[in-house]
Image 1 (cartoon, rainbow, N blue to C red):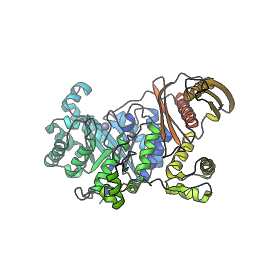
Image 2: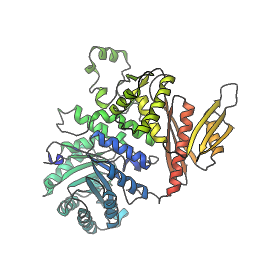
Image 3: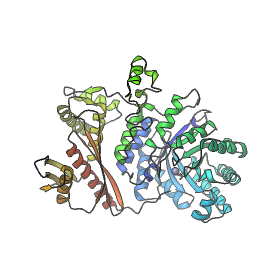
Image 4: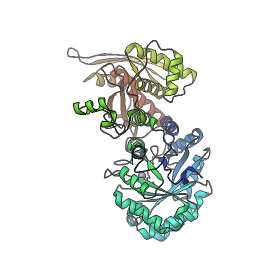
Length: 517
Ligand code: KIV
Ligand code: ZN
């Protein structure tokens, strides 16, 4: 029996790279998408929706590359109900060991009348045509009724029955606008089980948006009503208020197994790593009180709680920090640690670096261990992610010196290597960051606008590494740059030039305008 057909097995379908990327400002480049896909695969996610191949050349390449690299998870591409979309998805997914085409069309009266301008009968025909066409390319076809929760029940049942007959193995019921509530959504799923005659031939899936803050509650209600796939994203990333947060769905199922006896394949110890990576890449900060992955999710501030925790962790903790991959910031390595120990640590953290990359990362680790008394797992993750993010850049930071404080007008002296040529200058600004960014502008004139500048401390303490995100926008295209260093100004300059490098790549490719589902 396949995993999806074991009665209590819930398939985790991650759409961080597709629906998540549709959040304004959350665009990711190819390397970043691959890194996230690899983390999702290592985590045990069953299906990775890697993109919407017809939307842009960038989306096509991302799905295609992820299809080549990922072996354990099914790789999925989204397609509207047209031959062109489906062919493009099939083409992108060709190299995948396990591939799924996910095709969708709206079924609500509102969407059919105003968005599609189609009569219900014509939509129904499209359902059959699109699913049957997608089945020519793969046995694994998912069909979604967009705006399913606001659709007429009779029409929904008719479309679902036809989609299953045409070969869809998964039927997704999206709450596209985040409108439903748990009891109503559960009743809808139960109604489908009662009325669609061939429903036992498909896996029913949930796809909930969070406009009313109910995406996770709705997803769990649907599972209890018989759904066996959850579509979700890391950190709840997604359009508007986002999608159901994967870490919340998974930890709710694990922690309340007594009430919800369902099984997921996700190795929960990878959750923090995935959360931090998605946050660093997109520049979407995780709010401190966010469930599971927020900085305060396992912090106990009040005296009464601390006292209880010292007596028994179960007094105020319903799950352990270790179960989601929080290592309680234990010291892992120091300046006397050797290359072998460093390599072992990287493997433990899920990195498999080649020899050259390992040598570079090890050198930076030694520098970090000199600058910082204690090196934590989080430091090593930030360091290696920074190393990966900056590999092969056309603009590189060579030297930076900043003069600031109460006595001086802030001045940055900067040297950059641009396409192999060393350039230097001095610039004044309204503060140290402003002076450094002005110096970059002088050495590399550009018209990009700064949309976001954000600093995050990787660990506690004044010697913590700063992780900086910079979002730049040029001609309607936005990119996020990252930089990490114990010196906040160095991290800031690295983040800015990382964003510029990404814009350069975008300019070279000058992809057609992106499209959203
Ligand atoms: O929210 C939605 O309806 C979607 C579909 C494309 C599945 O994202
Ligand atoms: Zn969606």
